[in-house]
Amino acid sequence: MLTNLTEKANRTNCACGRAHAVDMGDIIIRPNALDDIGRIVQQVSPGRRVAMVCDTNTYRAAGERLELMLKGTQVDLTTCVIRGEEPIVPDEKTLGTVLLAIEPGTQCLIAVGSGTINDIVRHVAYKMSIPFIAVGTAPSMDGYASSISSLVVDGVKTTVQGKLPAAIVGDTEVLSKAPEHMKAAGFGDLIGKVIARMDWRLAHMVNGEYICEYTIGLVQDALRRCIDALQSSSPDASSSGGAQASRSGSQCESGSQCTSDSPYSDETVSAIMEGLVVSGLAIAMVGISRAASGAEHHISHFLEMKALTGEAPAHLHGEKVSLGTYIMSTMYHKVFSHDFAEIERLMAAPPRPQSPERRVARLTEVYGRTAPAMIQRWRSNLPGEARAKYIKEYLSANWERLQQMVLHDIPKPAELTSLLDAAKSPYRFQNMGYSRDLVEDAIVCSKEISQKYSLLYILDEIGLLEHFAHETVEDLA
Ligand SMILES: [Zn+2]
Ligand SMILES: [Zn+2]
Image (cartoon, rainbow, N blue to C red; front, side, top):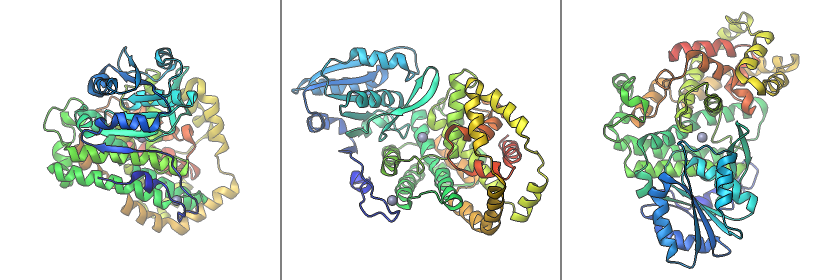
C-alpha cells in the first residue's frame, strides 16, 4: 500500500524545473477507514454544520453508517439522498436538488459516491468556499483527487471549476463490495495511462511541451502495482496470448453480466483505488491532465458525448477508456510497425486522401450544433508549409527512437487484451454496442474536443489520420 501520498505529491525542487504543491489532507485507503470520519470532519471543518450527499445506492453502501457515526458526535448533520432514475446525471437538476437540501451556514460537505456525486459536491463546495471530504464507494474513476468537475450543462458535457477534497476516504471493505463492472472500469481508466504517457512524451519531443517525468513515474508506478496485484490474484492475467484466445468474445468480456469468480482481491481493489487517487494528484501537481489522459480519453469523451445525445449506448467512463486504450495501442503499434520510408510513400500518395471539404462535412455531421467551434479548432491546427516541413524532418530524424518508445512503453494489443480480459474490462466495440462508423468517427474527430497534442494530431498533420483510423478499425473488427 502506498504511504505518504500527499508528501509524494509535494516537491519543491522537481527535475522538471517546477515546484509541486498540492494542498490536500489525509488520504486514507484501508479496511474500516470509515471509522475515521469523526476525526476527519473535526480536522477539516471550521464548524459543526455538515451536509452529506449520497444517492440511494451509496447511502446503503456507506452513507447510512456515516450518518450513525456522526450522529454520536457534535456534528449537526443534514443528509441529502439524490433519488431518481439511474444513472444520475450531474446536470442542473441534480445540482439544484443538492443546493435545496443544504442548510444555510453549512461549513463542510461530505460526498459519498464515485463520479457523479463527486462532480456535483466538488463544484458546490467551490461555489460555497467550504471544504469537502470525498468518501469513495467504488474504485471506478480517477476523479477523486481532482479540482475540476465534469457537469452536463444545457445537455453538453462541460468542465467547470471545483475544489480539491480536503480528505479522501477509501474504505476497502466498502470498495470491495462495489459492483464488479465498476472495479473493471477503474482498472480500464488506469490502463489508459500508458497511452497518456506516450502522448505526453510525443508532445514534449515534437513541440517542446512542458513535461514532468516525476509525475509520470508516480502514475506509472501506481499502475504497475495494480497490474501486479491483478496478476497475482488472477491466473488469467499472468499468461499472455493464450488467455486472450480463450476468453475474448466470451460473455464475461461485456463486463457487467459476468458472474464467474471475481478477479478482484482486496489487494487489487486497494491498488486500483490508490492508482485512481494518484492520477488525480498528478493532475493537481502540474495543473494539466497530461499524466492521466491522452487520446484514449478523447475517444472516451467523444463516445460519452454521443451517449448524451442518444446516438450511442451509455457506458462507464473507465469502460470507454478501456476501449480507447485498446484502439490507441492498436494504432500506435500499427503506425510504428512501418519504417519511415514506407510512411513517406504513404504521405506522397495517401490511400485515403484527406480533403478539407470532406472533413468539414464529417465534423458538421458528427458534432451538430457545436460543429462550428470544432471546425474552427481543426482549421487552427492545420499545418502551414513551415510546420509541415518541420514535422516531416522531425519524424525522419526520430522515427527509430519513437519506434523503440512505442515497443517499450505501450503494451501490444494482444498483451493488453489479455490484461483486460483478466480484469473483465470491456474493450471490443461490437460488444459495447458501438458501430464501426462511430468508432472511426471517434478516432478522426475526437481530438478537437481537447486540443491536446497526441498521435492523432501528428497523423492528421502528415495527412494520414483517416488512413490509419480506417486501418485500425479494420484490425479491431
Ligand atoms: Zn516535476
Ligand atoms: Zn479517466
